[in-house]
Length: 453
Image (cartoon, rainbow, N blue to C red):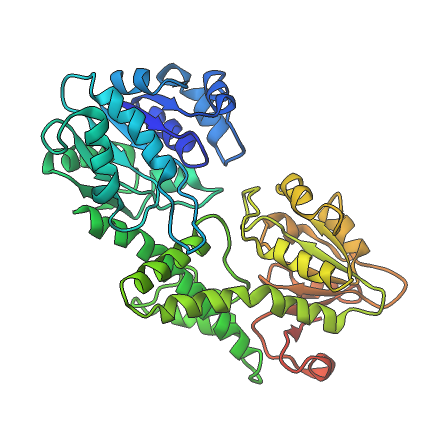
C-alpha cells in the first residue's frame, strides 16, 4: 500500500520505518524540518532501539516532506500521529490533531477516489467522531463514510521497544466509520504484524475508551504491586517477589507489570490515568480507583527519599542510578529518578546521578541541583547511599571494587533486585525493597527494605 504518516515523532517515525520495512511505500510529514531532513538522509530523528538501522535499510520506500498535500495525494491511507498534550484538567488537547486535519482535509478535497484517514494519537472519548470527522468534512467538502473513511487506530507501545511492539502487538484496535475502512486497516496489519494479534473492530467511542482503559488498568496493576511490596516490608519473612511470582500464575492476573519496586512514569501512563479520571468525573462517575492509583504512584519517590535520608550520614552523598523513566530510552518525563533527585536536593543533600542514555536530558532538567557522574561505577564510588532506580542491564555489571573504601561500607538500595548480594560482602550493604527489614536495619528504619549483605 501507499501510506502517509503525519507526525514523525517518537511513534510516527518508527511507524514509518516499520511500514516501509514490510514493503509499503511511505511518505512521512512533519512541521519539524530537522525530522524531515533526518528521514530524507536515512537517519533516525532521535534515539530509539533499531530505528536508525531500519530507516537506513528501507530508504528506497521511505521519504519525508513538509508538504501535507503532496503526501496525501500520493498515498491511499493517511495516519495522523501527532502530540495530544495534556490540559490542566488532565484531558488531552486536540489542537495539533485539528491543525493536521485541516491540511489533510484540504488535500482530500483535491483527490479522486477512496482514501482512509486513521488517527493514531491518544484522544479523549468522543474526539474522533465529535471533532475530527467534522473538521475533515469541512476542510475537504466531502462526506465521511461516503467519500473517505476515518478510523481511530491507536498504538500500544513503550519507548525503547517501539519497533518490536509495533511488529508484535497483542491487539490491533480499530474504531471505524465504515466496514470498508476497517477492513482495509485489518488487511494492512495482517501483513505488518509478526505476532498474529487479535484484531478488534468497533465504533469510535468504544475504541477511544479501550485505549485509555488499557493503560489505566496497567497502572493500577503497577501501583497494586508497589503497595504489596510496602506491605511485605512490614511482615517478618515476607518477600514481594515470592508473592507476586505466585500471583502471576493465576491467569486472571498474569505476571506482566506485577513487580513491586518503584512507580511508573513516562509520557503515557501518568497522563492516560489522569485523563481517564477526568473523563469519569466529567460524566459524573467517581474516579476513586484511578485517583488512588495515581496517589500510590506519586508517593514512591518521597518514600524512597525518606529511606535514603534515614540512612545517610551527616554530610553524606546520595547516589542515583537511573534517570530515564524506563530502560532503553533517554526519556525522563515523569521519571522516578529525576523526582527523587529533586527531592533529595531540596532537602540539602549532595546528590550525584548517572544514566546510560538520559544524561543530556537530565542535565537540562537538573542543572545546578545535582552532580553528574561519568559512569555507574563513578557514581557508586561517590555515594554513601546509592539507589538503583531504573533497571538498566548495565547496572548489573557493578562489582565489589566499585564500592570499596576505607570508612564505613556504603548502602545500596537495590529497588529492582538487580544485584547478586554475595558479590558485595565486605564492600557494600545491599538492601532490597519489598522485603521485611530485620536486624540492625529494622531498628533504624522499621518499615524499610531488608539488608541482604
